[in-house]
Amino acid sequence: MRKTLLCVILTYCFFVGYAQNTSVKKPNYDLIKKEISRKNSTFYYPKLIDKYNKADTTMTLEEKRHLYYGYIYHKSYSPYSRSDYSDSLRITLKKKNYNTSDLKNIVKYSDSLLKDNPFSLRVINYKIYAQKQMKDSIGVLKDYTKMRIVTDAMFSSGDGRSKETAFYVISPTHEHTLLNLLGYQFGGSQSLIDHYEYLTLVENEDELEGLYFNVSASLNHMNNIFSKKE
Image 1: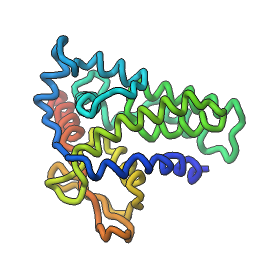
Image 2: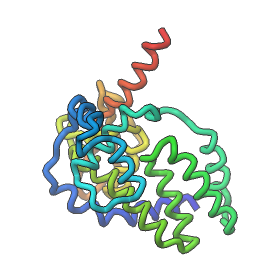
Image 3: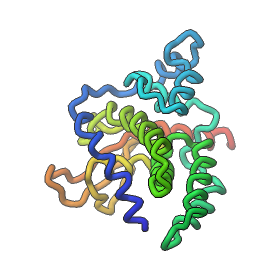
């Protein structure tokens, strides 16, 4: 069943082709913080999160970038936290076959998790799978749109082929998601180099040995928590 769930997210790959041709730009966290805090700004965060929750397909790339990278300044941002709903969802996902009640629970638990972590692509993926099985085409389209919003932001930050062009991610789980979306398989080795996470890849036609991810946002968040405790 896990393989089936993975296939759902891989069907999203057709969105990725254009992303590698998009001019990339590293996020300037300080400028983003200023913009999302100004009430008269196009990027005022309550406006952006409202558009995201409505799965607004008219969001510009800059709005998507301010939404995703601006989330590190939101009170709910906690890249290494774990919710009690994760256990409930995991228990349901472990079943060999899902009945209607199981599928509804997957959606319910996913929604609960997404309230605290709205950009969890893994959870959105599980929700899409359940909605597909229940033939909820409106729900599927809405959550695919949300995935597109988040991944557009990440793909606009780099190509992952070097430290200089690393993908900027605000959650460690997004690293493996990007690998899947690009059609690569994790090679089994993961290392932290300064504020970069390097993931090796299984042999591929692009002859890439691995990809780099800038994880400064999540590391800074963790360091801030530790400094407050001291």
